Structures are given as C-alpha cells and as structure tokens.
Image (cartoon, rainbow, N blue to C red; front, side, top):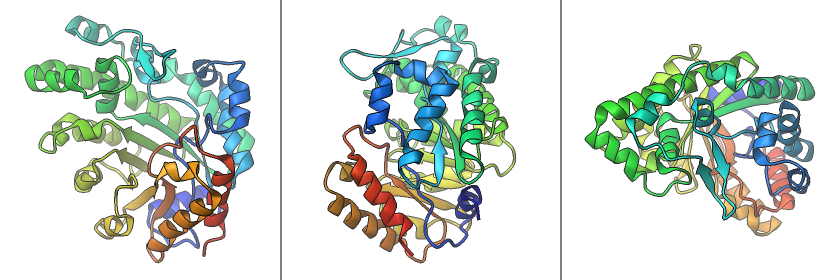
Length: 341
C-alpha cells in the first residue's frame, strides 16, 4: 500500500498497522537546513519560487519517515492575490500592507482567477510530486474564509477579531460580500491545487475560537461548507478548527472527512463520538518537542496507546510545529510511530 493509499484508507477509517504520520507546518525554522536557506531568501521569496518551495517542502521528508508532504506556503497568499499583500514585521508577527476597513476597499478586492495568480503553488505541487514519486501523500491547504477575513480586517496577527465581528453584527450585507469574495478565491485556489496533484486538502479555521457558539454556523461554518461543496465529490478535506472541537457535528456537516483537533481534546473520547466514516487527526502538544527525546517518546506512545484499536487516526501535532522544536525529538517521535504496532 502506498502512502497515498494509506492516507485515503485512514480517512475512510480503514484499519492500518500504525497511523499515518505528518506534522502540521512540518517545514520551518526548527530545521538548520531551512535556516540556512533563509539566510539567502525571504519567506515570501521561497513561497513564490516553485524550486525553493519544493526544496523546503522536502527538507523534513529527507530527515524523517513522514507519510505525507505538506506544501510549503502560507494561508495569506489568498488576500495577497486579491490585492491585500502581507509581510513579516521586524518586531515579529504577520502584517497586512493595509487594514481592510471600508466597503470601497472590499469592493476593490479582486477574487477572480486566483488559481492563475497563485499558479506558482501548482508548479510547486507538480515539482514535489516529481521529486518524491507516488509513495507519499501530497497535501495542499488554505485558511477558512472566516480566518482569512480575520487577518484581513485585523491587519495582521490576530488579537480579538472585533472588527470582523462588528461587521457581522452591524453590517451583515458587507460581511456577506467580503465572505463571498474570499470563498470564491479559496475555491479557485483549492481546485488549482487538486488539478496539480494534491491528494487531500486541509482547511485551517484558526480564528474559529473567536466566534460565539451561537453564531459559529453563520460566521464560519457555512462558508467552509460552500467551499467544500464546490470541490470534486468526496475529495478528502481535513478541517482544523482551533478550539471548536465541540462543534464536530457542524464541521462534519460542512463536508469534513477528517477533523483535526488540538491537545486540549481527549482524543479517544472525541473519536468515539464521531459518526462512522469520519477520521480524526491529532493531537500531541507541540511544546513536547521542545523538551527531551525521552519525554517525546513517552507522550507520543501515550497518544498511540490511547488510540489503539480505533480506526481512522492520523497522527499529528495539536497545532503547528514550533521554531523551538528539537530535530532529534522529531526524529524520536517519527521513529516511535513507525515502530508502533
């Protein structure tokens, strides 16, 4: 069974000897080879170069026996393609080149032909596939419409999403206009990623926890549902909704085939409550990888043992890997999973 088939089997809750393993944001600053490349190129230069994006994507796969390659990119390529670029602040964190505040600014956003504007991602996907062959799954991704709108209206790193929530409550028509534009752009991006070889997609609703429980459907879920409904039927989509695992029924209703959960969730109990055919991804605390290899092995084994006998588990971190993670701990994690039976 190829790793591509292993993913699809896991997503359909088939039984495997061990769970497939990949790590959210598995490329990055914790790897010395990445830091070396970063001395010569900016983050956005690497994202926009298919050759460099391929190199960065494959760096962790050369070190570790991961079962999937996750395209090196950023969710903020969508607002950039629509006319609102992003950058990294000298003091740390992400900044948008301007804050989205007025109806005129929203009207000026261009949601059309996003796939063409971001075709460098498609070329990177093709290049990655050529380099690694068909033995590993290849994942594309993007932010949820709500999360992208949050960054666009906050002007960068998220604080409390007050501007976007104010728009939702006080000017619903303008909110809907913005979300329609973002959803259209995201659909185009996802279709392009699928066309260029992505085996599955992950949608990050990282700002989902800023929504009230009562309004989560209208603020976020319905827009994710719209995006997924526009994709090929039954194409596997993973939804990671930070802090919103208690809305699993809504997320499944949006079309998620796999629910990714953070480390605050009791994984086996969560999985047991899911309907037949829905897989779970997670959920080691990424801060564990900052400590010792011994602790990494203990905590990784704990997650594995807790899910023993459960079909449809993809091992992952409960959030993106931290820059402070130790490469030797990632090696211990992957080796522990690889040897688990």
